[in-house]
Image (cartoon, rainbow, N blue to C red):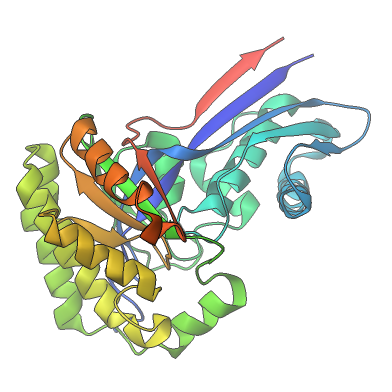
Length: 322
């Protein structure tokens, strides 16, 4: 019996390059894959569908993705599955959990049934992901620091402009208010629908930051320049979406945390997706541990959670055994 184990990282998405613009690709954006939180699942053929591990919501999501994927698998490759969720990326915190889970389910189902390996575009179509951003989809395959050029055709994924290695020694400290989630589903759809078109001058400025500052700084491992680019980009996108999320950051506690972090001389702070999670870029593991300890050990911040994560410069890990 073929047993599949798939391990995916999470993605940080620092915001789109365009929203409802009059010309060119829509959405796009900039992001990076990180090693934690992560989704780990095991799958094999079984007499009947069985989902083990995770809570009730996770089980429901797995069954929904499995149902979608099965509709696209040729009839001669159909089979029931037993899927065990060993770890799961938390939902609606800005990590792209649905994309990573959906792609992992679709890929596992494909490998278990021994059908010809589907393309990344096909996996995304089977799970209904990539309606706006393709950062997490390309990140699932390749990891690293990614720039998505958006999409003109609504039936295609956003075009991956470039993917580069993110410096392995750098770290992110993630901060989230406890028991708070970001926009998703219908609320997210409404937020996008209620936003005016992103001004072309803002798209032009974001493109300048990415092309002339951020990408070169990542390639050259220029920490100060990368930090400034991350802040400028995130701040500009956050300001644009402030009517929908109540400010540059989606949660006032995170706005307070960002101010505190920058007072410590750390410039690279930005929200991922709709938040509420923020990421602060640190130049080393030692610097990240210092920043993490400053807040995790302070009772004034007991209502928030903090973790240190590393960049992930590879795609999802797939282990196949018999």
